[in-house]
Figure 1 (cartoon, each protein chain N blue to C red):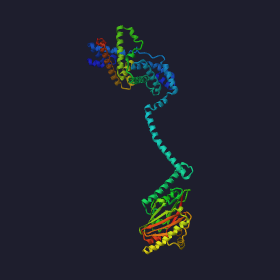
Figure 2: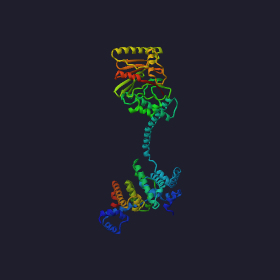
Figure 3: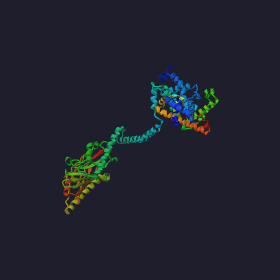
Figure 4: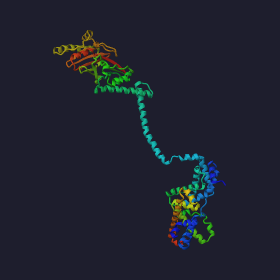
Length: 390
Length: 198
């Protein structure tokens, strides 16, 4: 046994927890080594000091009572039990309060603008409903009415798009003259799926009569728009485009599928307010004279004169200066009665005026086909006026 | 005499007098641990109160098949270490303050030789000051092993470590303690007067 081994076992030796054999060997070394004896003596003194609790202060006598009073006061607010301990264990740490509040504020900031947008949309729908019907409606009704308005907008777009991208077999109706400054037509048929199909998609050429434009829908409100459209065209003619011009002027472009020739029908309303019955008669009479004179002049120039072959009564009424017969709104006008004057121009165009209801229109047929054919078209073509009520 | 475990069960049933009995039985031992760990009376008293409040709140976690004392002292050690770590963030420990309280020290030493009493008194002060300089885990081992007179196995169960780990810790803590004491005596020029150097 050497001094290093004594250092290893010295604490156990002083506590008398070493095996007897090891303890006797240490004792033998201590008898020979005074340094290790001093170490053991110091260790024993350390142990004595460490185990000495005589200098420990004592708690105040009121410690227990103070503690129990504290526990009782705590128990009044929270019952301490196993269940209470579980509840306390699942308390949210304060470190999570700030991130949680930040998340809540962020969600509010994201959701509140979305809700306000939704409310503004509902208010807009309400306004649309009230302006259309003049009566307050529910939100559901507002949405329905707004949907119809959207459908009307789609119809208008289709009408305008027809001039840009013509489609064979596509038919539609357009606004001619308008009353009460209303330009947006609305009706049940226009908003119906069938009407949309006619307006938006190409139609089988063999399944429809291209001579007649679709009938405008039934009126729904006091606001009225008037439309004029050609009917009774030959079956070979297909509508290519409808182009609305200035002053409610309408241009219908048809294609003769048999000869690939185009026919332009221009319908422009006349200012009836400026025309009295007498002046209208004069104008028509003048037109008739012009027709006669032009016809004679063109005849001499080997340009054939074309006439719609009006009936003797109509022709005589035109030549005698009678005004066009007034027809009620919504009825088909008799072509012979409607034609007050007929002009045949040298560039294969025919112009004449018609009267539908209370409105006069200037009709102009232009084509690149033969004059004979143009005259034949002008003979059979008729026009129809419909009032569209919103 | 009713066992601690039965008193704990009665406390869980709402009997506050049973808990009062538990406090009276263990308050001195708990305070001894806390005071040795912290070194200041008032703070040790506050921590001691926290220990018993924690015991009252966590009593449902106590395993009745085990002894109540080690479980209680484990809470006391952990509470003391937590208090020391909080205190380190505020101010440094003042050892002189801890031992300037006017208590009645060394009553048994009065009966011995004055020279021996003086040496032990000086050594005791040095050792207590050195204990406060030990790391917390060494301090806890020294207190439990020598102050509370627990066996190595009991210390191991209290600290939640193995018995071998406790033995190693005790050995290292004693060596560290001796180094601190010798260093202080050397600084005072009293190294030659140490009992080990005589």
